[in-house]
Image 1 (cartoon, helix red, strand yellow):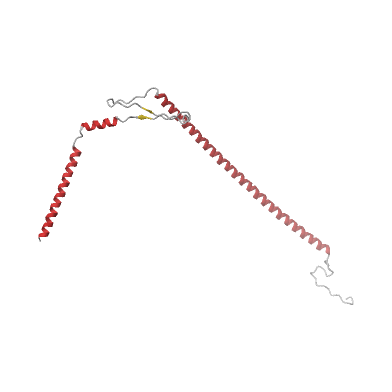
Image 2 (image 1 turned 180 degrees about the vertical axis):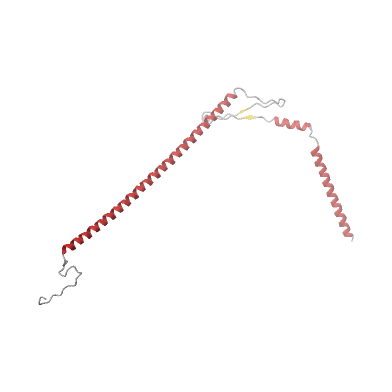
Length: 198
């Protein structure tokens, strides 16, 4: 029984310690969230942000890349005490304007090239459609000519068979009632001749 009471009190003590650690941690986090930020820390962070130099990179237009190497220009560092933004010098403004003009020209050239490619593609499609149409017409004419030739050959064969039949009938009529043989045309039975002439 002694061992079970020790275990019980050890569990109660452990629970109390854990609850105390939880409450103290919550108080520390709450204080950190509610305390005002020290003013010195904010000034240092602002100065750290302002001390970074601002850089401006100006690249030449793609047409000029072959003539001139790329140039990088950095603007002078801002003074931490002044809060006014740096103004660009008048020398930089024409270069920026010419860069915009060059970009606009390049965009126009790209648009013109794309329009040419589309026109060429449409032209190729139209030519292919025309070729298919001509091939279909040629096949139609070829099939029509073959059909007409077959019909003419069939008519010629019928006419030839009819002529042969008419020739046979004409020969049969010319042969007379006896036909080619003395026995007639073959429809009558041959007459028997006697020795005495009956």
